[in-house]
Image (cartoon, rainbow, N blue to C red; front, side, top):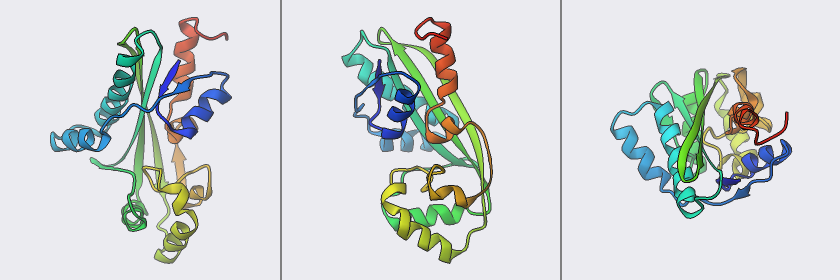
Length: 195
């Protein structure tokens, strides 16, 4: 099994579940794909699914014999999507837009087998952020920038970021970027793992 991602969080989730995937960077220009899909008016769910598929396909082309998992996560506030912040100021602007509102995290998973897509799933979680003050927002980013700069939402709910929220509805694994329970169910139904 290959994980078409270098995400340490995703790799740790899979290993904690008793799987032993090999991580391989997919070398996909995510920003260009996301920008093109956004310009076409694509739904955020379709953007996540397409990015996950492009990653899986790219790796499966070089490893057609392997089961390849492609993953992607999109944060959507209404129809607007957010990319990972490039600077602390980007993160500050993102969090200002999110505060006091409910947004969605859409985590897509696409599996390729024999270089063909065989299964896909998009998990959805809804997160409602407190109307946090500018002072707390600035202090939060000062303390957490090195960690949250790798996160599409500029937060990690498994860390101090959980304090930003008043309500969270959805699967924890989906929030972390990989809908693990549906994946394990699919693998179990296929006899790939024991249950």
